[in-house]
Length: 245
Ligand code: F6R
Image (cartoon, rainbow, N blue to C red; front, side, top):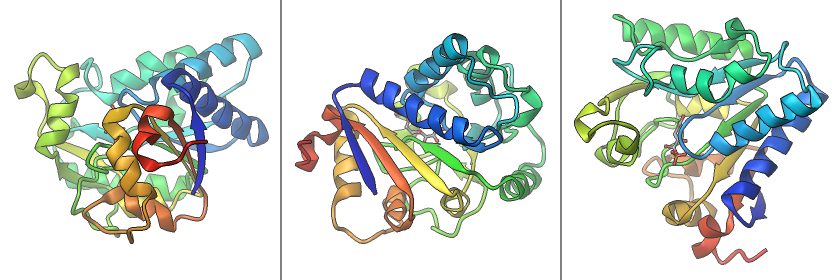
């Protein structure tokens, strides 16, 4: 895993955007895997800024998001459908029919998982953007998820619901289930960019960078076996790792 150390969230966001934009320029038809949450928000802002200033085009880009809550409609401000439109898609020239997010508002969830997995596989993700949970989750693959998992329905860990409660009126409003790409689906991406910021992530990052063998009780540890992973992490996140430059 290639580690890029930066000073701050702002620098992580700039470096993340630069990394993605350079890949898009090299391959304007690429398939991007996208994440939500707090971590990539700044990266998306810089992508929008670059699109407005330099005209980088997303007309031929396709995107696949990692996950979506079950029970929230695409119009719900807390859904990841809403998040992606609000924070990225509405501000660049990507055709909305090139963007894909699991449908968490469907009656047959299992069928939706199969449909999404087939689409992801057909598309073949060139670059997957990831954040990491404090418990090591990637996507919504919580500790204990099989490394062989494909797109599936998950029960969110209480710690994940608590961490995400900041976006909802109260913890009771945080959905209990989500659809997520599986760990095997994520690992099939040709390349992975993991963004990590803040001291809340420092223990997780320390564990990821330690020489512990990959283990299903820490989902992100599988990334050690992927041939092309870049981690852009800020000082606070790298605090407990002993990496000083
Ligand atoms: C989001 C996702 C999650 C987040 C993780 C970190 O699509 O799949 O794995 O990347 O929960 O979230 P933040 O960035 O809010 O700390």
